[in-house]
Amino acid sequence: MVNFRLAAWLSVAVLVFTPSLVSSMDKRTGTTASLSGGQIVMGAGTYPRANLLQDGSIIGAYTAFANNNKAITAVHSTDGGNTWNEIGTVAQADASTHDLDNAYPLQLPSGRILMAMRNHDTTTDPSTDKAAYTFFRITICYSDDGGTTWSYLSTPASDPGPVNGNWEPFLRMAEDNITLQLYYSRENSGHDQDNLMRTSADGGGTWSGATVISGGKTTSTRDGMLGVTLISGTNLIAVFETINMTAEHGFFGVYSVTSSDDGQTWGNRQPVYAPKGFNAQAPQVTNVGGTLLCSFQTDEDLSAPDLSTEAGKIVISGDGGATWGNKLTFSPAVSNWGGLLAIDDTSFFALTDHSGAKVQKVILA
Image (tube, rainbow, N blue to C red):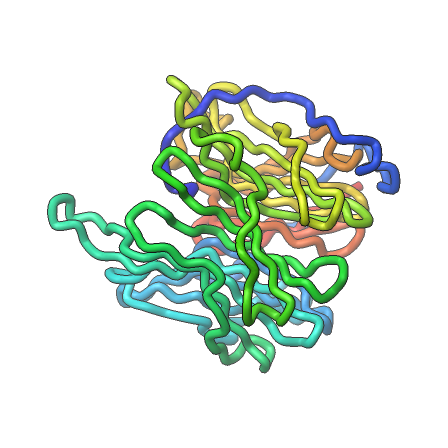
């Protein structure tokens, strides 16, 4: 859970991949990115995410707040992301007793649209007057009419409170175009969090047990905010934030793991971006025409670290994740909970909460 405001010392290092992961890549070392136009308003909310639909339009989602309610809101763009229209409410609940957030949309080959989200029960602790979690869930809803109306489908992960939280779901269709993958983060204790994956062979109706993607070999790191993209063939890369809970002075950094078998097994834990003495967190990753982009939020431009005042940035890899560079600020502070969406082979959207859900087009050259 990335709202857990602690820190761990990390240092910038070079990520090393085995040759098999990059042999078939379009190696575009030196690729640079530039902003195209200004930020576009997606809606009045936070944690924006989006995915392409089969007809070329875009489905998006964010968390909205109104009248003490939290609502997972679906939006749609038919003009390449230049304008967004609210089309439906996926789920809503009283914010004083319920926590809805972390929505992620994905269209299945059948045309059905899924929306994964965190869906937790809360209560108010009378001793502190603060919200406390009593039950944690990852919930999947579906729409068969393009995102206008939504129904409950399944609960792939659930745990009683107060500790074992499930956070930040990410959906991906495997390369067999049958197996649906759900990635998410789960707390084992206040000092230990792992990234997990479950699979479904029936479009999200039923789910396998969880396998560990990262964090399983330690009880002192909190891995979270996982994002996944295809490198080439069946080679995947996953990025996530992590923090060493035993460090005396520490900070969030962005790390990665890789898979050569389309997500069945993972390894090769490596740093992507970790500014010494500052934070980099809440990453996502995508592939744009053979170039990998990793986004994150960071306080590295400040005189002192401050997790409440972070900007949105991107680093680029033209060699399949072996090295990262050409850093670009795509959204100034305060920018939080960013997402990425590849549009074509030369452009992508960087999404963030910058005084509301915003979309910034970025061009590669």
